[in-house]
Image 1 (cartoon, rainbow, N blue to C red):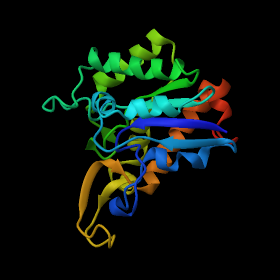
Image 2 (cartoon, one colour):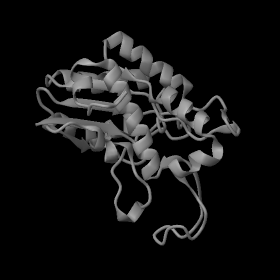
Image 3 (cartoon, rainbow, N blue to C red):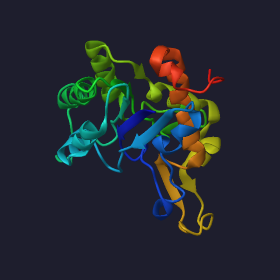
Length: 229
């Protein structure tokens, strides 16, 4: 049984009843996997590469991950929080160095790393047009690490931007925690959250990652169900 260990933030984490209807990408990604692959999701709300390591979360993965497993690395949203020294990383400095630490942790244990650029927010300026977004330097920094370390990368940022622009502002609300008051008994107040996901969004962006893995091919593509473009 091959395991996918996932390190990331709230866009990835596995949620429960207390945060319903929020879902994370790692929570639903098993839908796209062939038999013989499982996900162990270590992503947690609010974490950056720095705080994830400082809290010992990477160390837990290092104790568990083994030969032939995978480490999916998906950060950026919280690394960019410059006013929070516990989480902030410089996109072309400490962010890159931290990503390399994650990669080394996988490779030292004969596991396979994968970099995934941060999911875009619903930053619309028109119905079918997004603004420049907030993750640009972190996307660029991660791409540099992928090249420098020869690690496969899924550009979820670009894929999610394309999906959001195609869907439009109104249609894409159902992907995110953006809804009116009274829709959910567990979350009776309205929500105008353009970052976190509901089930539909988690599935949508998981499918983007699955598509990216198929394009990478090899052992990365082999894990994904047939029929994914």
